Length: 157
Image (cartoon, rainbow, N blue to C red):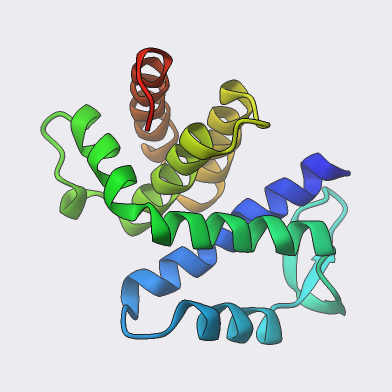
């Protein structure tokens, strides 16, 4: 159950980060409150989240989402530096909003959430990239996260 809640938390965080990218003037707490106020969740036959039901999001998914969003906002300069260091010939401005948000989220997990194995973080990021990104997103995200994970083996964030 925690794995599904974390996936849902990651997907919600992606949506919030995407919204923040396009509206940088909004307060993060206000954005979180508005998101939860308007978010609707249901499971379809495959267990995929859909924004169509009145069922509330599980509290653990909500807490994980907020942990990710707050952490990414707080450590964004560090995360962006890590991503930029491994993204040869790619500036952050050239990356799609979805790919960059996924990379920030996974980089935050790799750097600051020790209870999540690196492989799990990377696999989750790739799966989310498959769902929300372009057809090139999974391999792009995988390549950069692999490099980030290798650099973290020898250094701290």
